[in-house]
View 1 (cartoon, rainbow, N blue to C red):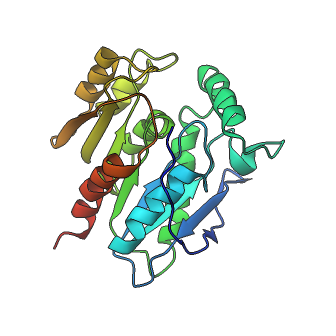
View 2 (view 1 turned 120 degrees about the vertical axis):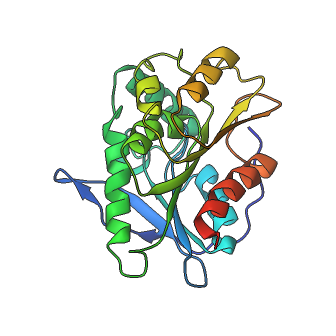
Length: 239
């Protein structure tokens, strides 16, 4: 995976989130001017709420006047007992957790709870909401999107129906109604083209598009990140 150079970002603010009596680690970044919308962002299987992938999303969204909100995955970041932020350790833990069904639905519920907490703040209460999350962000994001009417547009992808323990995703995808930008890597070594196409095809949104880029599996960055953010931001800030 290549690394994109990051410019200066404001320090993230901690957000108090609780669901079912359990604390959910969450942070958010705010633009220098009044926010025009909120982007809920989810990291991939090797990341955490302030990993490089999330920082790149924040760097792309803040100049557009968009607040970015992120939480740790079910076996990531502050939720890890060992405190290990190493990408390889996180990736292995995620693969094991995913196959065991950990977070299959609850991760989406945690993201909605974080959104609840942010939108209770007066300055965010009436703002439009979007979602950006590929790979793990799609695996956990699709069940959330299926039942989250506040999200107007989502940039997802890099997952497939025929990946291990993914048999539930097509049915949830059929209930997704927001505008969707769905990406795939043409030479993805983890998710094959047919399974990826099947997941895209299952999405129930009237306005959806499949965008393929050359190369292997990787986080959103560069042109792909710019395209994803432009899709979501355009639907949050139009008018």
